[in-house]
Length: 276
Image (cartoon, rainbow, N blue to C red; front, side, top):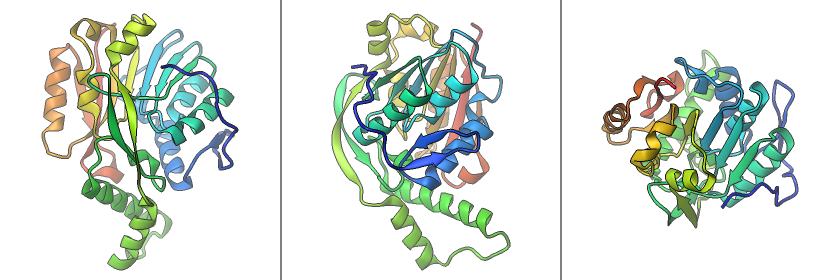
């Protein structure tokens, strides 16, 4: 169900961005990382991905809303549907979009192959790895790689932290996980409910559930989607090939890119597009 209300008072933690936005958030390190990716490196507008006035964007895995806010700040007349299943993060997403984004509808749910309920794992110490398809070993390796990257940026020329210190930092970043049952819906269900006939950009950051998101698009709805940017968690070494096959069968051309700081994680970005 869509929800446009804020539903909560603004969270106390605020992050002041270099461009002057005061963003409600949970953890400074991850907010800095995501802000840099979206606002400075423009990771979702590479390889010919573009937006224009009047477009509709689906933000699957919106987290605290940085991409939704970026779209609203940089393009006129863009409509955004933002999907986020974590109740705690939804509160922050609502606060941020109420402050900085006008044409946004927040959906407090996840996106999957069909409407169902699933167990969601939430990491308060590192919210961006929360999801329904959690792999503890994968999460630890991802955070370890991120901490090493930050360490090398902060202390250039110095040795990496020793193993014991690194594990302390990883465990501290993860925090104590929480689990709850969340509602999942399919993209085609949303399209039918809203009568939206064109998605200019489908952004997917579903922490390992990206193929399930694609599986929830009915055959008749694929022609409504023109651009896709998605993060692929290639945990088994086969997901990039599976994604390529799925998207090319629907007429998309795909470009894959892996960011330097994620080269040891198997996380790959996919840019898919076709003629409007």
